Image (cartoon, rainbow, N blue to C red; front, side, top):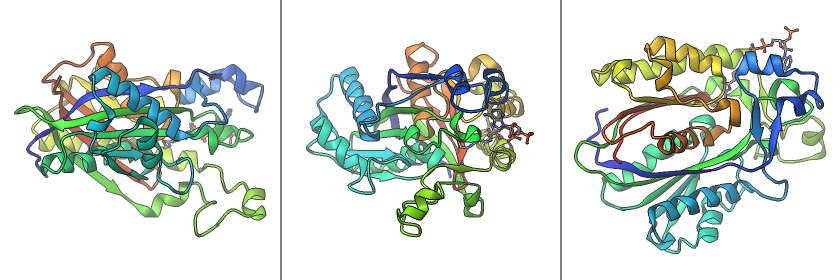
Length: 331
Ligand code: UT7
């Protein structure tokens, strides 16, 4: 589907908790090693949010710093979409808590749950409201407190995840800039390989669900890895191809940060030079919905993106969900 490109990201910010959990810390908690974690995943450390705070806190912090950066009042926001799989609670939606926290009195909002693709899906959903002219300023936030759903006795998952949030502002675009195209997929047959089975309507919280550890992330890592590598690379390659572009036309590739080896495989397939790839998994691990807006925010701060640049975003994860977005950067 060709898009006109009438909506752009016009600001981006992030929030990472102060507290660091290093590989050395994890060596004391489970049977693992810094060497295993770094060579198999690329992760050195991750950030952990205070126990007493929820995902909405990080989302609100990211949004507040975005408003400050833009010199904007919270009342100017029309819509808040929060991509998350770790909402503060089943309901109200995290978007409602964020709206109240930042004082966005004129906004409505909702949460979007698509695991690692949550932010990408939310970006395209949010962009529709600007494209149709219904709204002028849409905040799209990706935020997850993965430490709330990680079993810190399971070495196969606890080394992989961290907490964090990123927020972008969507506004009508100047000619030629903006979201140019996207390809999204889901395949529910893969859902069983990466899930959090307890706490929903099928398995509501009970002594049994707690005893069986059903409120934690369950992941068959090898299975997910096998799916992730061709999916991430394939969807990105198809998106470039149908827009008549090659890896050389991309100024920056901002992939989901689940495993450095998955990113490297995609980079090889897309024939991208490594200096055009955003990698921060070493410092933050996998923050699920947070990885891509956090990465974009760092890239802008480091001057790695200029107006007119082609930017490629891509993700794959639980669902299965996978997809890629092509942007022409606006500012
Ligand atoms: O964002 C959501 C999407 N998720 C992903 O994209 C994750 C995809 N999967 C992965 O990134 C990788 O599969 C993992 C990082 C999870 C695992 O890496 P792997 O190279 O696939 O390792 P493996 O699962 O094949 O395990 C190899 C060995 C096993 O031992 P044996 O059976 O060979 O004796 C594991 O028990 O490594 C062992 N192992 C560990 N050893 C030390 C697994 N976790 C650890 C650990 N420390 N933390």
